[in-house]
Image (cartoon, rainbow, N blue to C red):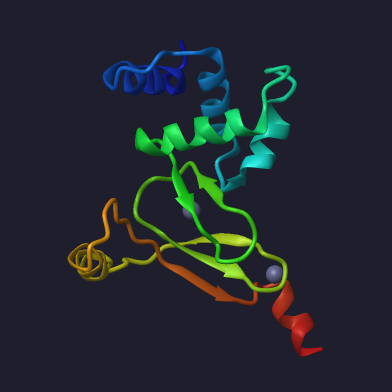
Length: 144
Ligand SMILES: [Zn+2]
Ligand SMILES: [Zn+2]
């Protein structure tokens, strides 16, 4: 079994979830893609290997991967939610024109706002940094 599959199998077993080929294929797709993807993109990519798989099933599986710490959800502010195979701390830059999302390598001090949100009564808090702007392709066009 590939290491990728093993990682998911271990995580599923450890949390009392069943290992299904659907979960393995969707997880593998996100890993192989190696970058942020919408639920629709993942759905389209796995449709051939998983005939009849529904969009809600793909969504639920990606949410499960997030729960298991194997994916991260990114809220780009506009456009659909993305799932990120990178789970280490990093920020995102989102283009306001074309919606492109790029990883930004920068330390983000989120402990204080997350703690403040908890004090304000929020549960299951998590923070993310999203910087919006114009990407390298769109910026010159906006100036033209
Ligand atoms: Zn752009
Ligand atoms: Zn990312």
